[in-house]
Image (cartoon, rainbow, N blue to C red; front, side, top):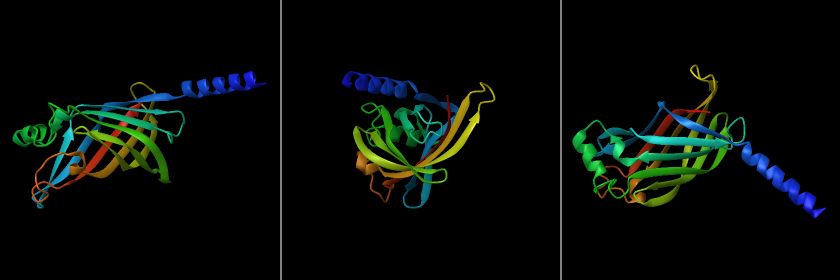
Length: 188
């Protein structure tokens, strides 16, 4: 009887693993950005031009989605070459030493309607910290090009750059709080 129970458990586990679906971020319909306050006077917006994102889920409503994101830190863009070079330098991101920023979710919990809390590990500047972000599941559709399923998400949140050892500029010059936002589609 133990052998039958063990065999059934192995088969069920294997079936669940194979039932997972991997979705890829559609870079043409995605953006990862941030806002930082300069001299407590104005907001500076930036984004990353190069990144890869995936999600894996075994549920049709994607309520168990695991998100993974890898950002090329050197692709930072604030529409100012001098500032971008400074952000890439060892004053901030130190992209020569820490070329990637990564995030992998550890849990997703429904708040209400299409609103969720997404928790995961963010690694930046060689430091990994847990973060919780607000996630909106925009919905499911079908791609007009491939006729395959497409899912849309929006993510927002705030982190403290000094928690990750990013930048030594005083908060009066560059705010410690960084507003994050990502918006995009995932293709099956």
